[in-house]
Every structure is written in structure tokens, then in C-alpha cells.
Length: 81
Image 1 (cartoon, rainbow, N blue to C red):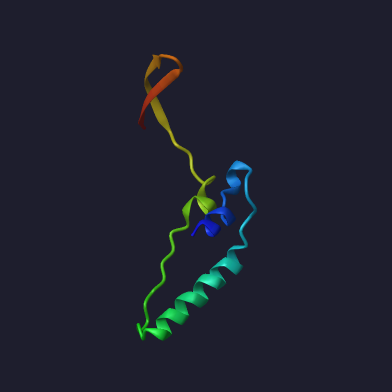
Image 2 (cartoon, rainbow, N blue to C red; image 1 turned 90 degrees about the horizontal axis):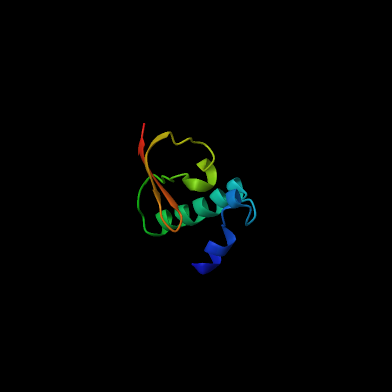
């Protein structure tokens, strides 16, 4: 499992390489279909959550600052709008 964690680092933070989504899906689909055939599972549906890699830059969080705590570093409390 560690080999996959290293390979699929998040490029949003400037680390890791971009993933070839089509190639990666092809690998996953081959393993999925092989297992379905091997274990005679009928026609299951493969559902994949896109995750942060694909949608990490696709949103905006809008909040309201409710308080600021000045300690050894500032902490900001907020609530969603």
C-alpha cells in the first residue's frame, strides 16, 4: 500500500506528479472486471468518489469570523455562512 501512497501524492501542493486519469482508471477497471468474472458477481456497479486530487481547487469556503484568540499564535473561530 505504501507504494501507492508515494505514487499518488497531491500535486495541488506542488509535490508529486500528475496522475494520468485515463490510464489509472483503465488499471482499476481491469482489476475490477477480472474480480467480477473470477467470482461470478453478476453486474455490480463501480462507483468512485473523485477526491481532492480532482476537485481540490473547485470550491470556495465562505465563513464569518466570530472571534480571534491571541495566544502563542492567533486562532480564528468561524461559522459557515
